[in-house]
Length: 379
Image: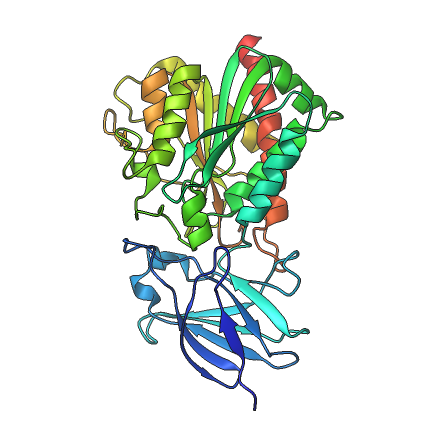
């Protein structure tokens, strides 16, 4: 029987081949460069047409979030456009924790990933498409350690200063799918929501804060192995130029409303984290955050408030994280939006789980909620 071939030598690819026997393979995930983090995988298999592939990813008890593997299903695509869920099982006891993926491809090539990837090429297409829209400017805020641009799309003429930014953690690809949906709405001349937001706000949008980690196939860090969402209190040109460039730009513009878009490995739902523990917390700040969260909860069934992160005690917020730093620094309403790698348990989709399509729609929903929030804020 001819053996399959496995490769990850492409944008955001990540897998190590330990052995191949016919259509079965033992695999491991490569750690982020200069870091202990690992969880993201993305690879292709050739030569499996009509045969069941059995792909075992081993050693996962040592991964960044081992609690993320139970009830998780790997994503698979045969056209790199539609991503579905493959049959997936988790065995904590086998070979240091093993995820077994089974799939019988209809074609000669199948791609597997932790979540539907958002490539650097697609990022450039997204930026170019948005920059062509009327009234949109594209500004390069700085460069990453690998020399990639930190793109910021700016639009709108209103007084409310809005910052939306995503993919501090590069493996959380759903965050840039969210950005694609948000930018489609904002640049659509037929969208009344986008048109009104641009009238009322000055929007600054960074679709990918960590292009190096994205291209390298990292889960959580940049080219130097740095977790960017632990750098906001003291970013440096040597370790975290991405954060330094974005925060300096925010200092120049000011911030009234900010959303940091992420994905969560373990919690099977969409949720938010706020800034309740910052030292200078003001009643109007936390009221604004809670009001936005309530509006989004009412507007879309894909958001929920039952599951989420613990709230830190008063005065104990980690100011190295962007949501806390911005709320403390600017007195603004800021928040972290989290989407699942697993399915969305409140509204599951057995075919795709949480998907690029639902991430894009959530981006549109969040902007609709922002417009309603502004109505109540000024009403």
